[in-house]
Image (cartoon, rainbow, N blue to C red):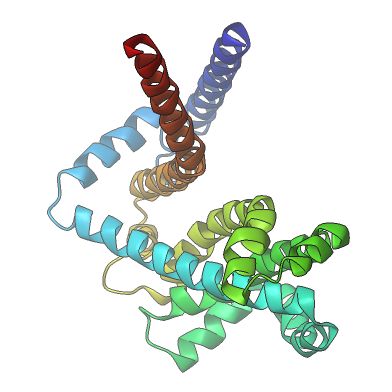
Length: 268
C-alpha cells in the first residue's frame, strides 16, 4: 500500500512537471506575453499579488461566498432529497424546478441573476441553482435505495421520528450525502468565480481576473487562475479530511477503551 501511494504521488508530480514543460515550450514558441506568458512570469505575478494589501480580502470574500452557497445547497438538498425520496408527490412537485436547474446554461443564470440581484448576491444564487440538483439527486437516490426490510425492522421498534432520522435515515444516507457534497462543492467554486468574473463585485477572485483581463495582464490572469485551482484543491482536501475525522475519533476511543481494559486487567 505504501509503495502504491508513493508511486501514485510520483506519477502526479511527473504529470504536473509535464504540464509545466508544455506550458513553457508553448510560451517560448509563441513569444508573446499577452497571449501566453511563461510559468516563471505567472509565478512572479502570483508572488506580487500575495504581497498586496487587499489580496486576503479578495480570497476571503470568494471563500465566504463559496461556503455560504455550499451550506445552503447541502441543507436544502438533503432536506428536499429526503422528502422527495419518501413521497412521489413531492418528487413530482420538484421535478420541473429540477429540470430547469439542469437545463439552463450557467451563463444565462448568472446574467439573469445580475438583473435581479446585487453583484455580491449573484454568485450565491447562481452557485445554488447549479449545485442543488447534484446534492438533491444523490440524496433522493439514496433514500430510494434504503433497504425496505431494514426500514420495516426499525418501524417495529416504534422509534420516534427524531430517533429514526438521526439513527437510521442519516447514517444510511451518509455515502450519498458525501458523494453529492463532494460533487457540488467542486461545482460551487467554478460557478462562484465565473459569476464574479461577469458581475465584477468589489472583492473576489473572479473580479480580479476580469480586471486583469481588461488590462491585458495575462500573467496576472493566470496567477488568479492558479489561486482558484489551489482553493478548489484545498476545499477537496479539507472535505476528505472532514470525512475521515469521525472514523478516526471512533478508532481513538476504541483504543482508549481497550487500553483501559488492559490496565484494569493488570491491576486485577
